[in-house]
Length: 192
Image (tube, rainbow, N blue to C red; front, side, top):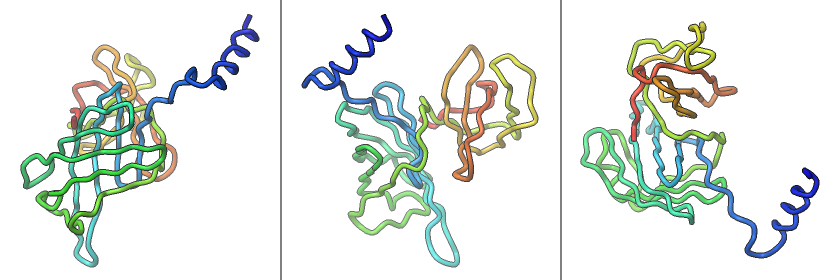
């Protein structure tokens, strides 16, 4: 029976109009972290800018993702009012147009230039959360005992799943394989 279903799936994929486009996948895109849950998108941009004395340009954004991979988003950052912009995710490329991004403290982007990034990590994150406690130790499962691994206050984690009062999170520092574990939901707050 499995062979019949597999053959049917192959046939449907080659019949025009029967195949469906894959849902957009979040993850890291150079200076961006992006989580997608259904049509909800949440992201964070973080970049050190300047030579010698550097400043940090960072902000979060959220919006409703359309089937074409585009979204109208609202960005929030330090020192400025929320900014409306346009987001686009096409395959492995992300683009964010925020005309007034320089209103956020630390941001210096040439006038009219979009922020862009190429995918560096695929992840099925449904949300992004910031750790709010000095040290959030991982558990092997939602109710298991604590392990030696942990994330620290201020770290950004991708949320993979919620179960009761626990979150399955992934910490991706950009160096090596992401670290995954369960933490208490009270130890982190959504940035969305």
